[in-house]
Length: 380
Image (tube, rainbow, N blue to C red; front, side, top):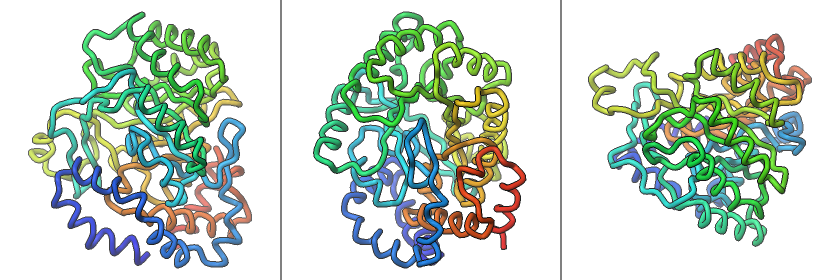
């Protein structure tokens, strides 16, 4: 559509003259002032047919109704500075973080790299952030002021410190979790999958069990818990985590995160190598995400849910993830390359396709046959 075409062909070129991290921060600063522009775009995209079909987009996560299944992924607004404005983009929900116990500068710069030919990003941010206490206070203040108009979830991770294992890791994550016991949260994600820290993925079952025991005991608000899985997880590790999740009434899984692989890239190998280590996000990891969603869907308990995250940049991608077993999806990298109107355009296309099939997002979950029909509709 016109708005997204204009962003890709003009605005993105200007933003890409900036360092990627500077561009990210610059755009976030503009978010609160963009509501007028977004209202104009919404009026152009959401015609009467779209508005009539809009209820078909509703989905449910941990018993809470969402207006639509497309959310903001963790990493976009780590510190909850702009969370009160993101509903203007028509996202159905948002996940802040990853939040760590203490203030952290993260890894040394440069640590964020674009791969425009693949519409991908490599990052090794290293869990930089303001720390749990400050972020919780900021989130609570925004909720108390009535500024937040959609569900917000929390993503927590252990601090980026070498040798943080065992009881020290448990205490670190627990310190973050306890700061949010007075917050209004849709769910809490425990990030088991950040590749940009000293220790990489949290892949020791014994440590994860200790963490779940401690957080479950401290969960006085009974926040639903999700586990975030790396798309690089082996089948054995996924089976182990799903089995463990049943012992602690884990509500579901976020599948997945960035990948340390460099598969499916068309960017010149030397250019990729210059970026160095870090997690890859964007379309090149889409198939890994979809494979993981299907695998976890086949392993999980019936009442557990999946949120898909990785490489989603179109309405067809949303359909593929939901038909594979996800109840909702999250975006990040697609916003870098396609801009703020992408969400509205995706939702409009999805609503109309669902209307043509006389179905809904709720009926699409795990229904691959229906998903294929809707994707065919979207391709016309």
